[in-house]
Image (cartoon, rainbow, N blue to C red; front, top):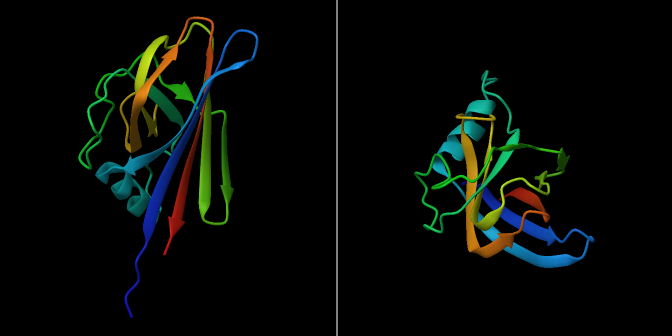
Length: 147
């Protein structure tokens, strides 16, 4: 008998204008990077590593690689996650980049276990999403573990 565990990540992005209208909406798959896999394995031994707590967005569209440890070009500060929900074999991370935060043309996003430094769980690269100064960008990141 051979066990096989798979991780699948999906990112949902919604950009709202100042009136709350949807300007852009995306659904993207992501890459759980090697550092993220190492982090998951380390948590099984009761490690002292911090749990995933922050999300970041950036301006670089270089394809994600398993060896990535940070965004290629982060934009603004990492945002503390607003919520983390675990249901069966799925975990959802939610963050919002408010008006005036991380404004520009966004091409990448990542999940981290610190406001700076730390481990990156996963990274996603997508076609340009423009976040104007008064827009709000909400991101829901879903990681599913399956056999």
